[in-house]
Length: 402
Ligand SMILES: *[C@@H]1O[C@H](CO)[C@@H](O)[C@H](O)[C@H]1NC(C)=O
Image (cartoon, rainbow, N blue to C red):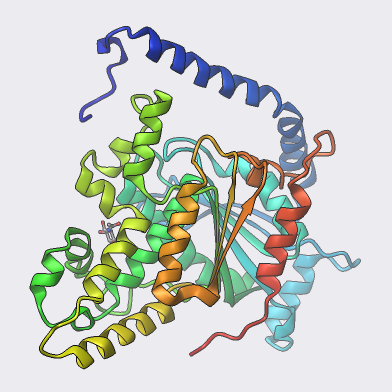
């Protein structure tokens, strides 16, 4: 598995060649069907938003990797007052905070090796039309970066959003992240990693042996970085995860079945071993967390119980208040099982009331983003259901528990 790509070194297995052609063909075919979206994208990016006071492109957010920038879209206002004027006035007078809008940071997918914020301008257009401040960052994709770099970029983009969104009329207490495919994986992993590193080791039980028996927790908890409260993520109101990969090992098997594991960057991005696959799999991280924390010390059963409850409470207070998991049941790129299993783990952790799984019948992998991109020449049956799902999720005005 390791090492650089050498397709020429592979035996010319006719089955593999057929599979590969099949994949290439479907990519080209789906691209053809995306031409109207391409036209719409060019028109929006270079015509509608060009010089618009509601659009702030190419802002640096990570001094260590200045090549990655983000775009900010102000919410579209139906009124005659332009949004930017309204918001500037709003933040200057620091008076009427009711005008602050929810903020959505959108992390695109692209198999950890492709994609750009430019391509998702229409996603920004859709979300801003729904009344949100939208932030779309570029992050380090393979081969410029591997999973650690990606996680760090996502984290810094979220921190940037929290620190700066008020200048754009966004409410830092209503910060949402939304990800699609590999982007959903990055959102879930970044948030989980941050949360677990902030749980005091003592809550995992007195014996360090239990933790070191779990390679995932051992590695997560041995990171000294997050013990002080400086580098942490802000509390998120919600996380919207669409068509995501949550178990790298399972997905690698799926890629192998499709014959694309050699051209996919995933294994290289994640570190090319079963252990690093597990370490970067939100589903496995949750499984191990449960296993270790529910281990009952036979000499102190009540204490073990209490400790377990404390751990869950602590975790709950760190994870996003609510999570929405969306997946199409005919997704062939990432089977729906990925989402349903991740959801089950979240529920087992008693995150039940704050987690919602929405399986959309007949929806394919790209639809959650493609259907949302405004394009009059394309019929998108999932547009309305997706918009309803998102706006119901974000409108929900539950107060942050302290
Ligand atoms: C967790 O985050 C730290 C940085 O805060 C990083 O060094 C580490 O690689 C991450 N671990 C995983 C498993 O993602």
